[in-house]
Length: 125
Length: 372
Image 1 (tube, rainbow over the protein chains, first blue to last red):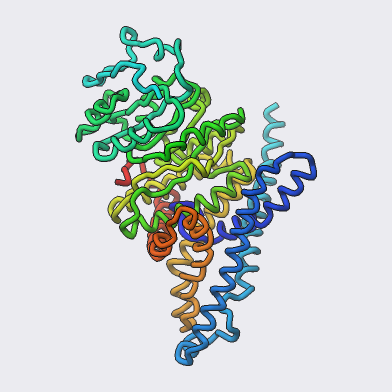
Image 2 (image 1 turned 90 degrees about the horizontal axis):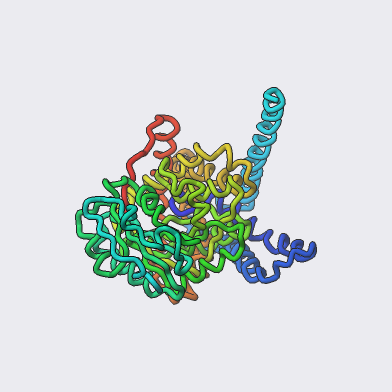
């Protein structure tokens, strides 16, 4: 999220993934001799926050589900609620797929633009 | 600290205070005392400027000069600045923007570093020292700090408080790890003066000069840092009227910067990914939030879809509490969380309007309006 830009949304998923991958990146940085050990504190803090967000979201989904199913009237209103946890796995994977499509499109766009640029440069020469 | 090296500059007639006859050795670059000059652009800031200057004078590192750029205020801002013994310069006429005022004063900066701070922003005593340390790396040309609203009372200030705690304790730290803080915040940032001059100062072509300048640095291959220990406290908009002005400027500024920089930043790794997901959130997520969720609930006659409005409460709470607890502000943070959901709904409306006006209607926002 950026101040002034709405919601957690896809950028939230993006930063959570970045946070989860930071220890891996840092590990390889150390292995390949890039001495960045002093950054482990930051890396582990952000990793913990990312993992904490996922865990808390799952717990919140469970809590809401328990509240909803505990009341027969509310449970009737939330007709599609079959299991206790309202947070399903498929929206998470849908978000990951959307992120992959957005970033993949960007990568593809950059490749096409780079290819188009090369012949133009050659023509100028 | 040494902010009284130069004589007070009188600029009542709007005369260039660094005119040939008046030029002091420091202004000619002969003598450099300290590494840093601070620029404080101010337009009708008599009520808040004194706190800003006092916090600058209380810094743990020496400051060569504090220059207040009085952008033709009508409330006695210049008198407040003079009474506190800092240099005051006044452009011949109102420059129309913060960037314009800062650019006017850039010619009076002869130190290695220049720091820009809003006239409604105070600093933690060691904030500048922490920022300066990041410039040990020669690739770094700009650095910014952690922003916390000074007053947290109204729903708008509370919403912004949560927004900042989340963004600065989670997202911006990750951005910094990957070497690409999205913006070096305009309210409190330090720059290498030489590079600032090379880029012709603060850009005036958009209404979000801080984002414009940061992205310009990236496209030229320079580095920017976010230093979480350097804390500043700006006054945030306290009501809808001023929040609306600020959000309008930020949302339009974001779209303007996308249009100007897209060709260059899409070649900058990580920054391009951030920009892409933000655009998605700004358009698609905003639309989903405003239209699709209620529509689904009505079409399927099932309120389960409305849980979408609050399903990310824990996602917000985790980084916010992680930042608030060490500050001893747990109660304030918990009490402010509902306000965040109000603010983000308003954010969504402004962002959609900005895209609509800037891209579809080609109606560019050009007037710079202050947020308080």
